[in-house]
Image (cartoon, rainbow, N blue to C red; front, side, top):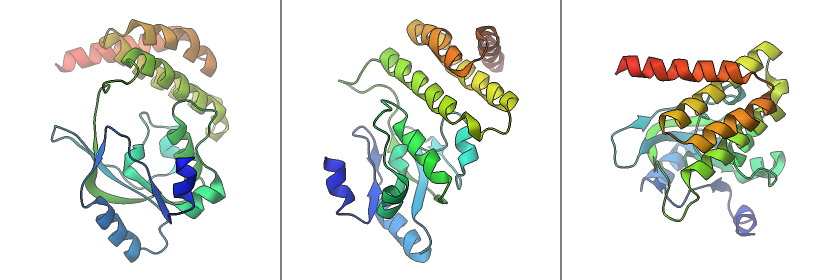
Length: 220
């Protein structure tokens, strides 16, 4: 209800998670860019990790960045979209309990160009905040969400081989993070449910994940 009120009151829509922050000058910087580029109706910026010097620099986004990259190409608090774009192409999908922003922005990139401002204007907090679901519960929902969105849009891939290869990479990457962090339940969730959703071999996913772990250990 609150989002609908904002939707009919504002020309531009931006999201901010309650544990992330915007730099004080963010809206001013993006507004100046939009004034200089009147064709712009969707924009995103670089992000930084709160409490660190780490900056995630992005680029102009296309739908291929969603289809062939993991994690997603940008974060929800770093995006701003014109109201008419949401009204024309649809809002967040209420059927998705997680990854709804990922699905929405992937859908928008089919029709719109996302401009990019290379300044770290959004601060992202890592970890699980107090009062939020446990990291294991979050990972369960996240991994299922990522796989369901990818499976639903499997027609975007040029062929079945490319789709399966990316599915193996995504699930092996998530399994590697779970095993490394000793998050056993999300690891079992990937092998029990995510692999069948994508129609990929558990053996391949396990082998790829163990290879990632070994490679990371050698680097250290």
